Image (cartoon, rainbow, N blue to C red; front, side, top):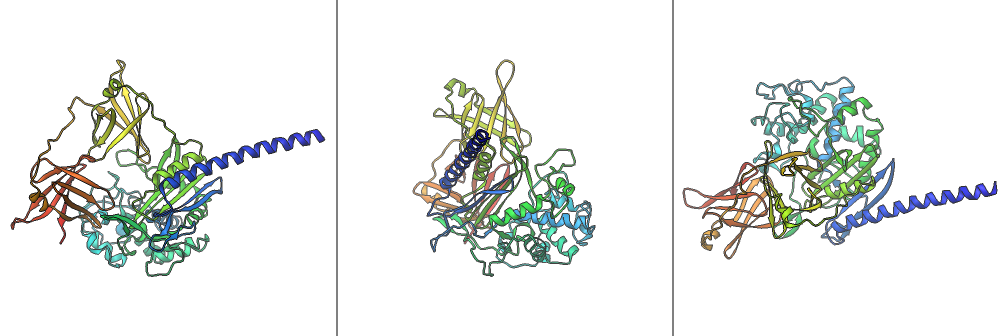
Length: 549
């Protein structure tokens, strides 16, 4: 018995050692991923990773307030942006279970005067971003009211008469108007204001003591400041009335409170299991094609493991939350700067936690092999993808997108240097390349067929610097989104809000193109001969920008 006891103790010590070693390795990898992106003297982030019901990692990085030199703490409060949508979705599903509404109810049942243009727009259409209603954050006029406090009825009146983008159920387009309307429906059906509903039904019962409906006037302990990239570097986030995101994005919270919310949802404390399963099922369009969205959550995968997830983006803040149900892993990363996205790092943390890290190593391919990939590839829904070879390196560029370096990790398989995206080239029986399959985290895979079309080229021209000077200034492309045109001797540069500065190259006296992204800019004069607007051509769109005074 003595010998057996010693043996059992030895086995226990050995297995405990393995667990400790795994935990140490994970912590080390997590620390490295986060310190690479969130530096001590820069804007920061809070992070939480949980596995099988227990928090295994919770830390903070960088600064909560750059001006006051306040270090970030794990308990800091952030605007969580569109993660709010899952709270709204659960509220709707609760009211459905209570028999107070149906997902098939038409929105005119709750808003009788809402113009539907002869279509049937249901609650489910709003939940799944398939209503076809114009998203108010896509409207140019939104910039005129972005700092104005508005009641729900006022903002609904602001966007309700806009033309529809498509017939309900036929397409998917991310839509803040849909979730704004859901918030108003919650108020009409429950008899509570949306802020009262989330506070009384969710925050208080679940012990979410550091969660709030957004209110910039209210004193909120440990609230992190928000930042964005400006022309001269990082600056304070542009102001925005928190009455406007409403049920689409107004909640403020911490990573730990979001973890409490996650536990309650998945323990079926808020809605029944069968209801939640419906929320986590990809919605199908009228033609039978599935989307990658359910009710308030995106549905994707990480290294082949299914995910239920959502991110948020709002003035000064970017957030990401990911759940892998099979492995029972939950990750939340909140960033207090729109210049530092948490999306990739959150996915990498999750991948490490499930022991499927993104550890792709570049392999060498000879130049002849690389030349075989060059060409114009097309997808009927997404346009063109151009594969080019420059200085022995292969690049990929989609219509309207940036030119990105791709690196081989084996023959015919490439990974993108700056994102969790991959290309897998296809060959026929004669080993000729016929197409390429693209896959990207959070998006559906696409097949691009190789064509015989030549790679388009643009001829550069020189334009006199006195003419270039007339184009300088700020042009508003969308609410809170400015394209700044500056000049440095004989060079013209463009810098969009929150982005870097890029050179514009002339192909005529008035039309210019970018090399880093597939986009063109054309300048126009008014009747007085003054340059008063530009048009940005990108991704098949023509976006007009009026020159600001």
